[in-house]
Length: 127
Image 1 (spheres, one colour):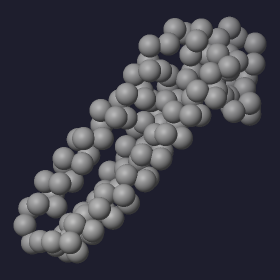
Image 2 (spheres, rainbow, N blue to C red):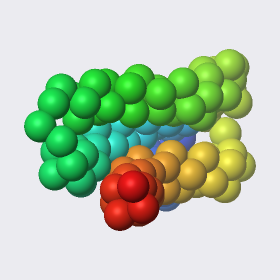
Image 3 (spheres, one colour):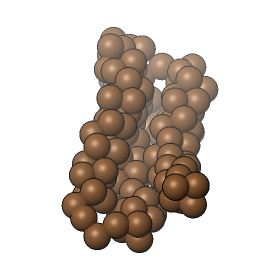
Image 4 (tube, rainbow, N blue to C red):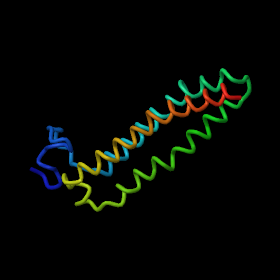
């Protein structure tokens, strides 16, 4: 076995064709994919709600603000993992911390667009 390979096992304990365990890369990938999902949901969920209420450029501007506003939150999760040393980044004991941050990242990516759409719908009906 080569040095740096976590016994040929991935972070989940499954065979991964010799990939080394690296929580930094996994969190970076999680943030990147969740940002894509978040942006897609913003386009299809929130933007459609905003388009129904006006015929202006407001929906596009709102989309830019909503995507730009969530990036620092996602970077917060990623920054925590970037600071790890090589040995800490390969430590299987960090799995529960990774899962917690991973689940929080996905909860924001999936939940926030629907929450914002509901808030916008409520505001439209109130005003």
